[in-house]
Image (tube, rainbow, N blue to C red; front, top):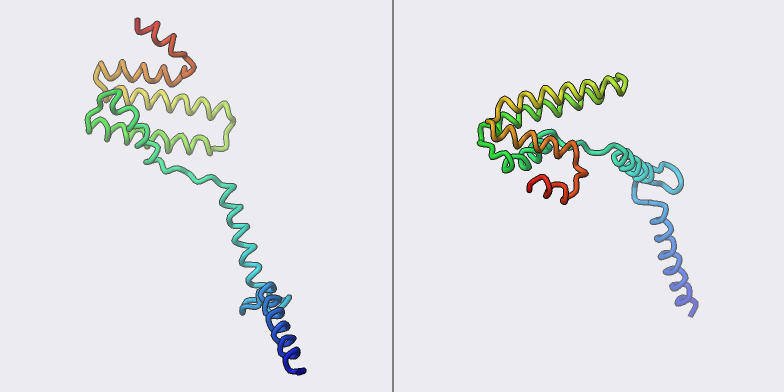
Length: 159
């Protein structure tokens, strides 16, 4: 008679102690309260995630250039040779802009350098385009500089 309650008690203690040891991570990495290798690993991975969230992932230059070319190719009716040449010019421009932005100079100097770079890039691009494409390119640049124009104003200019 006493064997049945003793067996239940033993089974209960065994199941309870197993869940307690699981809470302490007694799986070879931890021995009770000391040597928290498993916990440190979890904490470090959390810290790694927070570090990666703070630093935004940089978009490759080639992806940015591809998006720009994709937008302007139909508008300017570019041929494949022009696409390749423009891609090279834009890639160089974006990389140089990145270096200028990271340089430790005043904001005014950065703005002046970027403006000069933009003018040089525009000049290089215009050398590759024919007269119709140049007109369209200049219109695209003006639209990019003044994006707040309403549709009504655009309709009035086209009439």
